[in-house]
Length: 236
Image 1 (cartoon, rainbow, N blue to C red):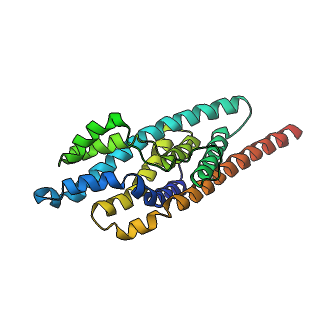
Image 2: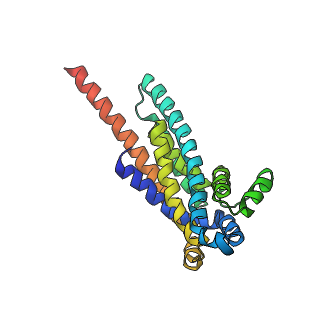
Image 3: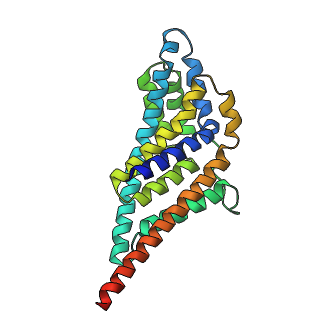
């Protein structure tokens, strides 16, 4: 994974953090209020860092799995003579995800709403009410598995990375980027962020479209270059 790829996904995560205010903001605010007394108040930043570290760890695990799947896909593609198939498939999936987030894909339900699965309510409630950093880390690990369109889009980028390490690094960048607004909300300065949050989904969707198009272009150009080289070798 190149530094430019890492910072691109980091920027995508930062933009997506505006959308995260709508999705995960209530969770962060809930445990922030619970910790807003006494000694716990002085360690509020530590709780936020623990929560977001847990989320990011889950994202990295999912990214490694996606990267492994992309590597397998790429290997099968090379056997079939189709180079960079993982990048192209991931790019197409990201474009579709962007269209869904924008509401431009009829018949496909957009991933806009937030619903906490009932089986997660009890353990999540206990973790939110506990003042310890370990509980917030565990809460973050649990919340990392929540369904979210932007996480899916980032995982498609990890799929295009085509190795477990690069997939994990992709989701590390995404997790770091998405932590920004959540920490701000949790520390109580959420007014300005919430005003921007209404544009978060649209901005994130456009970013997903651009990243998907870049992945497709990269895969197609690399494949064309490979075929051109093979044709040149054949005429020698």
